[in-house]
Image (cartoon, rainbow, N blue to C red):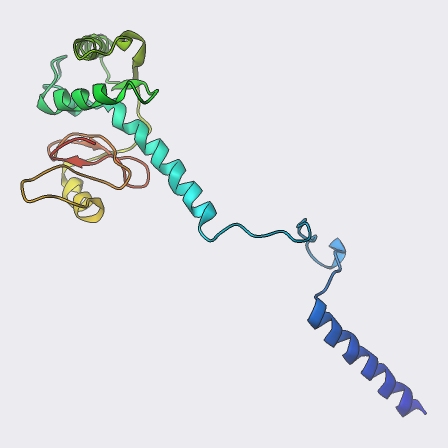
Amino acid sequence: MTHSIAHSLVARWLGAAALSALVGCHSCDPAFGPACADIPPGAIPQPLGTYACQWQTAQAERAELDDFVVYMNEWAERSALLGPCGRAHLSAIARRLDSIPAQVMVQQSADPELDLARLATVIEFLAQLGVGDAGSRVIIGTPEAEGLYGFEAPRAVRGYTRGIGPGGGAATTGFGGAGSGMSGTTGSGFGGGGLNVGGYF
């Protein structure tokens, strides 16, 4: 009789185990593991890549802000005179300010008087190009993007840029940051934005 009882208990245990395997375990006792996920019945998961695309979009939007930074190496030495790259960069910025509510940032240096002179230069330059509210669109600040030293630029170009034409046309990174050419330092955007060779945007 003892053997029969044991056989019956084993059969019941095996049946319960098989049923749990089919329908899943619904125990949410915190004492035995993490709490159950609060997923309503019939919920449909988001398409593959939804959250990855959100992060990529956030990175691209932050890198976009770097397009509107005038870096120290875009000036002629330690002066308030724009160099060739700086003038080209500001010309490209002026074409976009009507459609993008962004502020133009003049990278802060260790000389406050020089920064104010550069600020005035940028405002005047943009006003001459037809930016009516240039005085309220230009600020002095420190960009979020980290810089690249000159010897790092070629490696960044090889790793991130695409589409350099036979005539040496513009080649930007995937997130399209702004910066000067190969000489000196240039601003690197987030997730690879910020390096620009031969042109802007």
